[in-house]
Length: 438
Image (cartoon, rainbow, N blue to C red):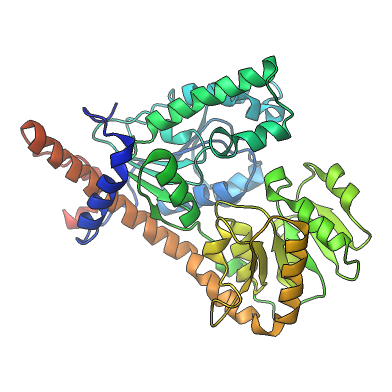
């Protein structure tokens, strides 16, 4: 336990908000980018949105080292995005053929994340969608947590995941339900460890508040805007790009386009679920499978619009499409609400949002887009995407570390006032401060 008295979850929102309001009015000391930072990430099976955030944090802090349960990143990805970065992995990473079943080891992950020794570092940044937030830290060690999502399959989407896996109330289903119950208990216990939580969207911020009873500051993930060329003259096809997990609801998009064969759709992504999705597709729908980065960018840049029917925590692919000047047609819940400037609500709209995950809602949104296509310009989309630049992310992370330091000091002061402890003259995070400012 980091604090002598654990506050009740119901009081944490007001308490954290009070600290943030009072502290954020004062300037923070500049944080030394050469500080030794331990960046704890759940796992690295491939290079997607979470790993893009991880790479940017490592670039911001050149002496950062990564701690992750599983690391399956190809050598070329490491060389391009993590040059010189040291990766520490768990013992589970050495299990035979673990790439095929690592997700099934989730019940061991809380224990294994606690085995990483990060206590010798100046500060800890956890990049968490499940486990990394539970890493053990010193009482005086700064811990900033970037939350991609509370554990989806343990909380509000448990029943959906169990249903998709065909797990009812038989012996196997009950065993999984009990393990998820234990995971929720651990997840709640570790929720008060970080000094400050960052959420990647307002949607995730609301989930953090509801599940953990904590407030969080919204810092959108970084998008490499300069990697995406603005394309004004679009081709006559639509694109959807996603890992084909069930919650992405790519099936709704495919069925909507299958009913309108005059519209072309290109489906970009890996082969998970593809057999089922291909069975739904008409002749106007093309599956590309995995594409190299430059080909992927070319496809979304030339598309008439990107269509997305899932509820994403943020959705970096959506922001990347906007950087190319490509409009969005998206389900109006989750991170899409932070990204899209909706038609009818903005002077410079960048897309259309629909309110139901249903085939007819997708089709109606596409119809609405086509009727108002001239109102949604590539230049407006590109300008909108600049809100998510890498430089903005860097500054936000540095600022958040400064705020987290102030939160930690404020809590220490509050503890001293409550219990009469002698105040320490040692700066608990002195190694983080820029030497020139000391």
